[in-house]
Image 1 (cartoon, protein in one colour):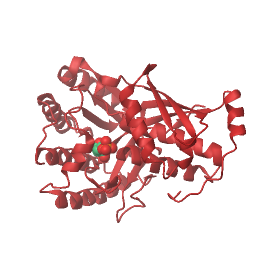
Image 2 (cartoon, rainbow, N blue to C red):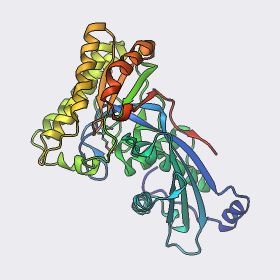
Image 3 (cartoon, rainbow, N blue to C red):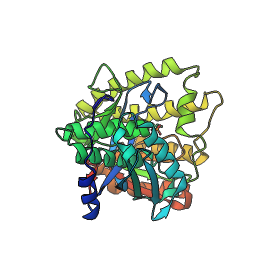
Image 4 (spheres, helix red, strand yellow):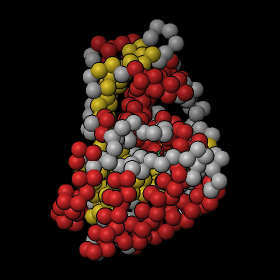
Length: 365
Ligand code: PMV
């Protein structure tokens, strides 16, 4: 699993036989994830400045098929990318760059051309981040490809670890999408978290088993600031050091509440992390305000509803204006009524998606 893996020489006849039999492809469905402890700030090659913890989603997924064709020289991989049945030059460029960056680690890719066909379970322009599901699906295809060619990975733990490591190099948060239920990424004193890949996290009370995530779309436009720029602003951020230590403290507290089943305390940390993330954006140089007026109204209404009804529902945010409403399944009927009656009027065209904790990626063929 290290960058120094030596791969044996490939037998092109076997690969050509696979092409003839139309089995030179693999397909994975991989989910998105929502962070409870946020990753914001990185160093070196996608090494996080603080640990993060996320819930794997069930229904917001990307399905990607990767087909390989051998080349007669070593100048590959040449990439073709179809998104929702149409050639997509932007994604092609992104994936080509990603694969070029992996050539030292996966040198065998030079001998292939790769054709990707990808689609999301949610509308592309919905304002739901797709880099975690998209990059993890590609990383899984690459890992399956390596396994088919060389059989180097001993078991499923090694397989998903490798896929998570490759996903991280595409998009940091994508490395947490490879595992069922919850995942931790980044070294810390309290868990087995590692910097170069995500790990599964399962030390939580059964109360959290069926968490729901209703995603309220406040604004579906392009992100005002890319994650890349956002992370880089943490390099010179006046509160950077404090943030990194707070993230560790918040993780330590969250782990206790997850273990003990203290759902209201859990929610306090989840909301604190969302506000810290946006506070960091607001206080970076230059600053970014990614919440919209309706984001704030939704947050206020969620807090008031919780206070009035004593129901454990909480908000969290990604690097954008859309609101993730987190709550246990047992409260679904009343929370959904509350969302329909009080929050949907604040969403763009009344748009929202229901999701929940999921079991991780699925191989389709
Ligand atoms: O994976 P990236 O580089 O797109 O960063 C995403 C960071 C947040 O979504 C804002 C937080 C997180 O931990 O997912």
